[in-house]
Length: 457
Image (cartoon, rainbow, N blue to C red; front, top):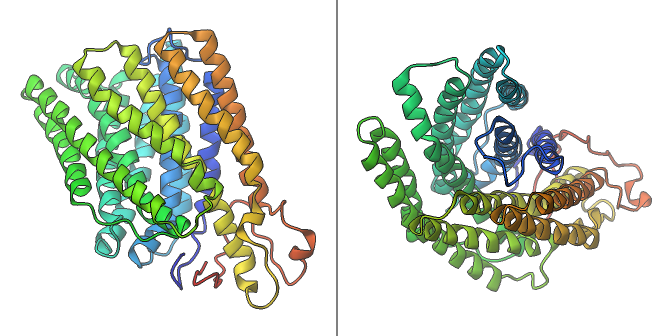
């Protein structure tokens, strides 16, 4: 569990709430038909959904998690101050400007350029400020846990993603029209996606899960895999070299980018080996809802990652790549995120609400804070909908895709409701909440310090 003396991050719940809002927004737009398999993924309406998912959902989710678990990984404290809330507001405002900019581009408005420029001006400093704070924390504590290097790789990739993304936003809005820069940005779109989906989101998720999964499974810490570490570094270095050489030699840059693929497969394979070992050696024999429903996410990660290079070598149609990307983003990253929230939210809520009362009066079990049976029903629907959606993209079935997207949105909404019920302690018996008892605020933590099994809030 969390080490003694670790404080609850005050604004982590706010990050999670904002992230879940943008996830529901992106899924709702898909269900409403704002994008379909017959349409191009480069259209402005598609980019609204893409960035609502990647920035609004996945970025905010990961930052919220790192604000809480970064100190746990390193044994060090984050700097004190109100930067967390300021960054959250900046990212939300910047993202709204970005999504508005894409909408204005689609409608041919003259205000698209100012909106995109404003988005860059707000998003870039907001993201990079918190990224730098987290990077310095993890760098100082990089030897404390095997997870830290992977999160460091992820944060470095985030900086590259933001840099390329800001150039892309300025170019597509027409705010910047230098021919050489336009050519570079258009050629660098795959690198922007690679840094974001692989370098940032995947390696950061690998790092966080390196700590959380053994903790939740009651298994030994995952071992430091040299193959995983070296392959992860190789992927990001090759992507960076590709981005740097794209200006002077585009074919060579593309070759460097392609060379990152086998190293990524090595990293995936090494990670899966560590996951299997963690599950096999667990002392908690009956899987909890979060660890059980992480398994389909790991499976979709393996399938999509393995299929991608095969599709590249076969010169596959764009629909195959979009289908695999959907499986990767919603099956792997979103599935894992939602599954782990089913543990993290009750866990942090329990520590804040009942940690101070431990040893003074009876307290509920952590499992009492959430209905695992209801959540399991909705996860079944969610993963099934993701698979059907990916298949519908592959076979260009707009109607099937929209039905599956609706089911995915509905199931996600139900899972979010379960998280809200857990945070509000709705599943806990009323007698357990009698005085002395302080109900946690819904969107932020009061920063109490508890003592739950050697844990501290």
